[in-house]
Image (cartoon, rainbow, N blue to C red; front, side, top):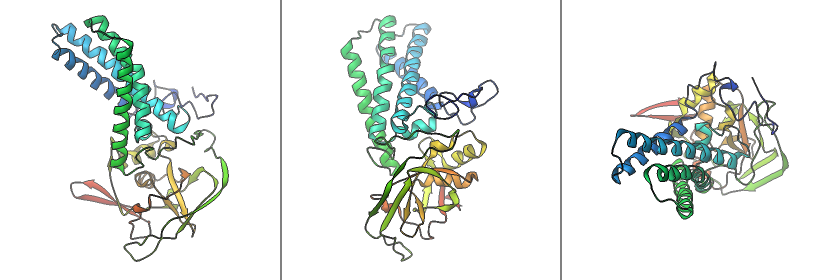
Length: 329
């Protein structure tokens, strides 16, 4: 049942569970964002119609919820897929909750997801309510919904990026140089010229000073052993959005999470030491026991504030909540 698409993504990026939903399972709820979108959309539309005094029977309530649910599910699915495409250059993992959450982080990703999702979903809701409840609905109403969807998505994405400590506008996604995933036959590599940069020296709590140069050369993407990549930060929280480091580690270990979704941004200092800019992802790979992790070479300028490690980046404290911690080595 495996299919390789013509875009050379991997064994089909358009399906889940190995293209065998009869025998496969989805234990981590990789499409939960669609179910949640449907539930929220249904409740909002039902509440709106109730407030407007248009719910006079169980049928009216069911129809109102159904219209909102269909629209909400479509908004979550199409908006999420658009965000993944914008940040990766393909639809691989377009309906995975993890990929959607990553791609919709930042003002750009949120705005793309909000605009496209509203473009598909608002029409369904507007026309559905017009047909059943007699609501007025025009082209200007549709345009307003799409505009507000993009604005709301951009603001939400920006807030999520700020909360995660990622770049406000991009959320750490690579919109201006999209790469094509290629897991089936190895990780795709694109050659670029060697790059060398400089940033101010960083003093560590242990008294050491970070090298003031970094280098990125050869392939922009590849794979590295997670144990050869170092943590810049001294601690991280287990939870980020709807996901946890421990949950992602388990999903990586049992094969239900595509490692390419958690591709890490890394950089190399002048001494040849490799550091990550994505600490929760590295933590998940370390805990999973996988010996290879997809990486992307990045420029650390502007993110050196993360350099708080006191042990050379060999381990990091994972904050589990309630005063409980664990050390990832």
